[in-house]
Structures are given as structure tokens and as C-alpha cells.
Amino acid sequence: MAETAEMTDTRRATGAPASDDRPAATGRGDAGAAPGDGAWDLAAIRAQFPILSREVNGHPLAYLDNAASSQQPLRVLNRVERYLRREHANVHRGVHQLSAEATEAYEGARRSVAEHAGTTNPAEIVFTRGTTEAVNLVASSWGDAFIGAGDEIVLTKMEHHSNLVPWQLLAGRTGCVLRFVDVTPGGTLDLDDFDRLLGKRTRLVACTHVSNSLGTVNPVREIVDRAHAAGALTLIDGAQAAPHMLTDVAKTGCDFYAFSSHKMCGPTGVGALWARRELLEEMPPYQGGGEMISDVKLEESSWAQVPHKFEAGTPNISGVVGFGEAVRFLADLGPEAIASHEDALKRAALERLDEIEGLRLYGPREERTAVFSFTYGDIHPHDLSTILDQRGVAIRAGHHCNQPLMDHYGLSATARASFYFYNSPQEIDALCDGLALAAEVFGGLA
Amino acid sequence: MIEPRSGTPGTIDREIPSSLNQLYQEVILDHYRKPRNRGQLDGATHAITMNNPLCGDVIELMLRVEEGRIAEARFLGRGCSISLASASMLTGRVRGKLLDQALELAVKFTHLLHGDEALLSDDDLGDLRTLAGVSKFPVRIKCALLAWNCLEELGDVTDEDRGSA
Ligand SMILES: Cc1ncc(COP(=O)(O)O)c(C=O)c1O
Image 1 (cartoon, rainbow over the protein chains, first blue to last red):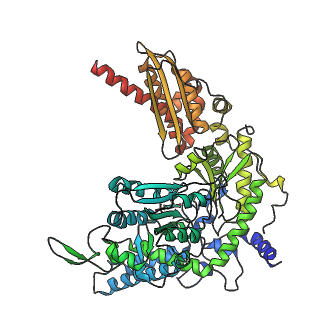
Image 2: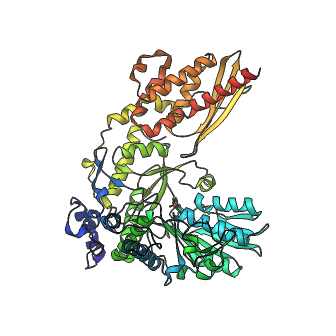
Image 3: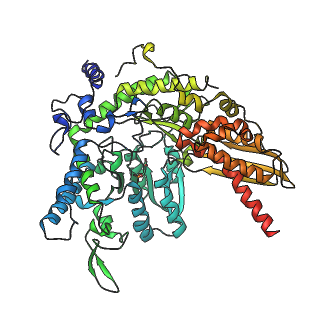
């Protein structure tokens, strides 16, 4: 079978040392993502991420904390460096050459991110500091303008704090009511409960696309349709989805979609809000300042066109430029290729983790990403993380900004291993070997 | 589908690194799995709950102080082996001490965790010295200090009590 052959190839290939200076990896922005013949050459892909070849505590790094933040390929690093070395100036403000180049780099990134999000209209992409700021933008701007006392916002019990706390703040300001869709023991949303919560007063449904601790892929199309049928708008937190799948916002049918650059091979401190143009037009500005105005008088001002209305002040230009390169890099790798390699990793990891006695995995079996939250006997997740780190295996331990979800499962913390397309089967081995070591250190499990 | 790893047990490095052996000494694991003085303290004169918001560890420390002396100390909470072992040892170590002496111990213990090796011969620290290995794991120092932060907070509260008396 082709698939088997590909995997065999991968296993052999990852054994090869990753190097920074191979031609395919020097990335000048136009080459070096995936080999053109469609085969998944993991060694070549890993070679483009310099950090993946470093050692940690005397062992090869196995970076399994991608749900927290992913690593950046040379193409992105080089693009940002080129911008800083050759093209930097403030954007939208000068007539000189550098300002024009910087503006073109910035707006070019907007076009790339728009394409990644599946919209034909770059004006529907607002650059933010990340998912967190995108949600806060909607809660402040749209929320303060259109939400009043007694209105209802439906969230879920699996939201990241960044899609929860902004709504709590809005509730504090407006007197609106928050409702929470239950999570089943299997780690999926209880859609019957969702139906019960939807009502005449529901103004917004805000829900994560993919759970950052359970890996659950929520049926967003279904959720959006039901919300729309109830007359509510929808916001989808795409922080954990955009890195892994085509984020065709049109297909989800939602009204707002938020995501972060640093979880999808881009720099930190930048992200995007996609929203339908009409909505952005109706919404008041989020912050005031330069860049977002059209005409300023002492007493009042008028606003720039969208999306600039929402981008007050000098933006994170180099970050945005890197973000644009990151989504082009992902596009060149090919969303299908990424998805199929991640799927193979996910199945292999599930199979291995299932074999480990005393390991309890949370989240669904199907419709999930390669994010694994687990507990292991009575060894606390922090201790697991410390021990794995001694073997170069980086995982996260804690509540993953999901405290209500942890409470729901009666947990205070889990260990979380989260994979990305550049991870290898050998890193699954490293994880499992590290767990065996942890059991040894603790003299067995209790 | 990726095949499960073919059986290569010989290649697995089972040797426990010495830093881990020093961190997870038997005494510590024993306090983790069989914490001493864990439970509600009836007649507590002082109690405080502190958490570590980054990782979710929570410790409630309860003291019964009689004439400035800690007659009994108990704790409740959840957390990793280091935070629970440290809390368990604390409760044993401070019983019978004047509150001020307990606070002095907290200072010494903090220095120990920051790598002050001279304190390894300080008998006042007793079993707590087994936690010295934490100094090699800076991110875990806050785990070891959680219960002690509770103690120091309680010390501050009693200072205020005295001041206002
Ligand atoms: C599901 C989810 N939503 C929101 C966020 C917040 O993203 P950021 O910190 O990049 O704003 C994260 C990541 O931490 C996440 O996993």
C-alpha cells in the first residue's frame, strides 16, 4: 500500500540528521517547503526547522508542546529577517520607498492570511495580537454596541480562558447572561444541551473549533447552522484548528473566526480576526489612535475603512510579515499532506498510548486532533513533565487554560502531548520511553 | 498507518539520570504517597489557602497556635509530589516551634532551594534537606515553596494581629 511505503520512507528519513544549510531549507520565500512530487519527506521538512535539531538535557529534542506554540521554519525566520534588514518603515504613512515596501509586505501578508482563511476579501482580515485579542475585540466592539442586559451568550464548557473571560467581562459591563454547553464524558459537546440553551434571547454562540486540551474537533458547521436558526451570530475560536486544517470560514458559515500566528509556524504577538465585511462595517472601533482614523477634529473623528478601523497604532509589522510567510509555507506543504501525516501520527500515538497500563487518555477517539491529554497512575503531570524533560521530551502539564473543563472532569491538571506535522514516529517512542522512565523513578504506579 | 514500534526494548535507556534520583528521593515519594498531617484541623487558629494559578496546585495550611507556639499544623490540598511532600514535611517540622522560629525555618528552606549548600548540614531543616535537589530544577521551586508561602502569609497576619493588639 502506498501509505505503508510512505511511512516506511518517513521512518528511515527522520533518522537523517537535520541540517540548516541544505539548499531546500535556505528558503528565500519561494522554495523549500514540500518536495514537488507530493511525497512527504519528513527529514527535509524537519531540516527547515532549525530548533528541531537541538538537544535538550543531552537528548534530541522531541517537541510535543505544539498546542501551546509551534516552531518556525527558516522560510519564516528568513522572511522576517529580510523585512527587518531591508524593508522596514512604518506602514500606510509614508510616500518614500521603504514605507511603500513595508506597506506592501504588510498588505501582502493580509492577502495570504485571507487566502488561508478561505475568504476572497482581504479587508475581512483584521490583524490582532492573537486569538485572545481577536475575541476581546469582538467582545468590546460588537459586544458593547449590540449586547444588553438579559441578552444571552452561549459558550461551552471546553472554552480556553481567552474565549471565556472576555465574555465574563462583557457580562459585567452589560448584564448579559452566559450559558454553557455541557461536555460529554467522551469529551464532545452535548448538542442536545446546546439546543436547550438556544433561545429567543441568544445573541451569540462562541465556541472553539478544536479543543486545546481534549483535541476534540467540534462540528462547527452544525453549531453555526443551529445558532443561525435561532437568530444568533457565531464566533469560532480557531486557535487550534487553523494550524491543522483548511480554515475555510465560508464553509463553517460562521460570523467571526479568530486564530493565532504562533500556533501555525508564525511569530508570536500576531493573529487575526476574520469577520464578515458587513459586521465589521457596523461595529464601532475597538481602540482609538493613529492608523484607524479618516479625519480627526478636536472633539470627534471619523474612522478609516475596515479593516484599518480596527488596527489602531503602529502594528506588529514584522510579525504580520512572518505570519504571511507562515501561511504560504503551510499552503505549499499542502493542507491534505499535513492532515494525512498528522492523522498517521495520531493513530500511531493512540495505539501506543493505549498499550500503556495506568495511562488514562481524555477526549474522543474520532474527530480529534493529535493533542493528547492524559494522566498516568498517581504520578502528577508536573512530575511527568519534569521527568520527560530530562529525556528531551517537551510536554505541557497543567490546566491548559481550561480550568472549568478540568473541574468538569474532577482534575486539577493533565499532562498534554501535542503533535504537529513536523513530529516523527520516533518522538512517539521518546514519549513512551519517558513515561516508562517516570514509572521507574516513582517505583511503579499507585 | 504507522506500525507500532517493533520490539526494541534493548534500546530503551532505563537508567535514571542522577538529577532525577536526587529530585525524587524515596523520602519525598513516601511523603507524596502517604502525606503526614493531611486533613482538617479542628480548633485551628490560623488557616489560609494559596494556589499556584499557573499549574493548579492548591494548599490549605491550618495552624493551632497557642501562646505564640505552633501546637499543631495540618494541611489539605492537591498538587505534584514536590508541593505535597513539602507541605507534609512542613507540618511535621514546625510543630512545637514558636511561630517566629517557623518563619526562620521558612527563610532557611528558601535558601536551600536556591542552592545554598551550607544548609545541607543544618539539622534544623531535618528531612526538608531531601528537597535540596529541587534547586537543580528552577521551575519547580515554586512547587516546593507553596506551603511555605502559606506559612509566611500566616506569619504576616499574626504580625498584624500583634500590631493592632
Ligand atoms: C483554543 C485556544 N483559544 C485561544 C488561545 C489563545 O491564543 P493566544 O494566546 O495566541 O491569544 C489558545 C492558545 O493558547 C487556544 O488553544
